[in-house]
Structures are given as C-alpha cells and as structure tokens.
Image 1 (cartoon, rainbow, N blue to C red):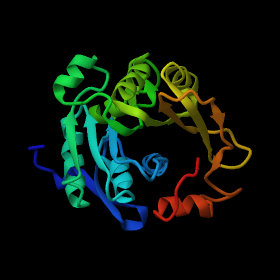
Image 2: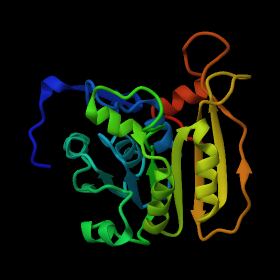
Image 3: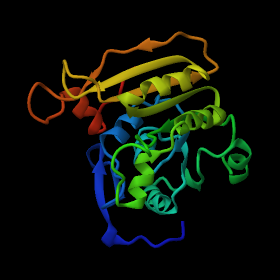
Length: 256
C-alpha cells in the first residue's frame, strides 16, 4: 500500500517467541492469542493460504513462518489495515511469498473475481471475523476498531460462502470465533463442507468455552467431530498451560 506508516499510532509486538514481529494500531483492533491459535491450526503441508479479514496480517505471518514453501494472500476492506499488513510482511521477510488485496469479502463473486480473488485456488483459508452484530453492544469510538469487531446480521454466512468459493478441492477452511457464534458457523459450514471439526477453547478446566475453532474440508463427506476443549490456563493465575505456552512460543502446534 502507498500510505506512510505513522509510528506514533502503532506499537510493535512480538509473536512466536520473537520469531514474528508486527506493527499494530494502538487504538484499533489488535491481534493476540486468537491469531496465533488460528495460525497453529493450519495443516503443515499447506501451500497456498488465504486470510480473510487479515487486519495487520499477524495470523498469516505466523502461518508462513512455519511453512517455508507456502504463499499467502491477505484480504481486508480497510486500506489502513493493509498498510500495516504490507509492512509486517516485509518486516518478517515474506514480501516475496505474500501479497495483500483490498476487498470486502462479503461482496458477490463477480466483484471478488474482478478485484483479483481467485476461485478454487487456496489450499487453506483462515479467518477471524468480527465478533459482534452491529446492532448489539456498545460501539467502539474508534471507527477502524468498530468495523473490525462488528458485522451486520447474516454476514458471517457470506464470509463462509467466500471461503468455500476460494478453496481448492480438499482445501481446509478454518475460522476462530466467539462460542456464541457456533450455531451460525456450524450451519454455514455444514451447508458447504464435510469433515467438520469443532475445537472449543476454554479459559480453565470446568469453565465454559469462550472461543471456538471450526474446520471444514471442501468436497469431503466425512462426519462431524467434536474435540475435547483446549484448556488455556491452570486452576489459578494467568499463566498458560505448558502445551499452550509452547504454541505461543512457536514450539508447538494444534493437533486436531
């Protein structure tokens, strides 16, 4: 992107034990553990990654760092976000393996294709869509943050529809979202994919899951599977359990 990065409006944060470094907006939507877990869920052998609603591109950068032969396309509707994503791709040495595309992923297929988003192309599609319906909750005073965190009712199905159109045969589609969105996500995935796997993510053992990872395979007829929850923390404190900490350090992966 052509915009100049304003260093007064961003922070630089490390991921995967410092192997990935990324600029993020100080006041806008900021990537964190969800982005790292999303990247860790990608199968190792994938070769062509599409991230829908990429923001600053942290998830894609984390995924590329573990897959030396993979290429990626990062898509977002916000030019400011793609400015950061481009900087982060270059910062981490991925500029020859990845590029960005300015596009609203909920647009109809002809508009997506005209913009440059190919169909039946990507072996992995990942997404961390906005969490909140725009009519609910308190709107963020930061316009970028609000657009990154809120979507219109029914738009989640459009995200999954775009992922389905973009995936190659046997391609994997992986979303991370709040647990409350699971019914809508499952309906959208079940209409288009097989071999659906659901991985709830809970803060502690015995507590309700707050996040969910869901994966489907294009063209598969295999049945749905519900995994045991991924537990993040021990009974007390904020420290991550060793197997989870290993993922955040870039020394482990999700096995599902």
